[in-house]
Image 1 (cartoon, one colour):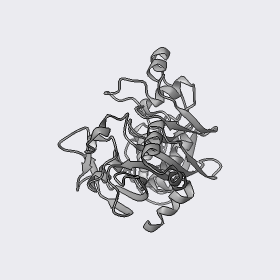
Image 2: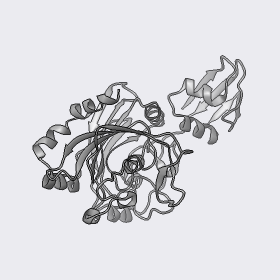
Image 3: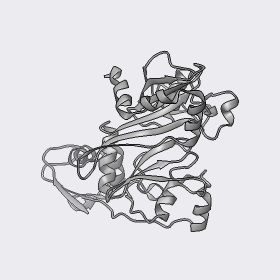
Length: 328
């Protein structure tokens, strides 16, 4: 699909495209980098190209496609104990509940089948704008994090959803079980970058990328040692919730990478779940909200350590949305 625009003022190419199409800054950079943009009929890869009045800008959106998939038997065997539940699907988007210990997309260190492999195996049409390994992936979840994730089936949907996440029009809410109750609802606004002493971790680094997480207290365990909290992301940095909790000397139960210690280190995965996603549908423009059921290991822990009647009330989405009013 092609779109054409006429330049109405002298402006940088990337800024011009930001004003004309629903796309994040990164998505626009990718369009230019991958030679999908022409200025007066000539392809350019310069984000900062200074445009002149009345120049013609042509943007090409590549067709959706399915790249080669891994061996079917390998994927099925790798995923046999990982249940991926579809929450919602239409022609533009797919929403699934990701199980723990499932990687979203390929990387040099990934040996098992990924969520993208599963999507391709199911012959689901996927956007291609993020590259071969990340077909359809608008946002990520850590391997050890379960929960809701939205998949773009078209490039137009991908651009629109990426823009919503970047401008915070889309809302992402997580549930976490931590090893020590918070003193109060709180906001952590600290920059995040790769930990200079451990490449497996992220850390609060002054020169890092801006990051903001809001934490809301929901329910304390019967013995008052643990707490169920809700987390609202304003940005989407790698390991963001885990890093910001660590800065408060709190840790997600089971997350030994970021400092959790104790006998619960032996649990399967850690207790962080992407619970709710709020966004505007890229085509219908209807406001939508979906939740993903908690995984069994979290439900079992809650049942053994918390008053479940209170938990059922606290995890109702209206209550979770309301608990963040303190930050407005």
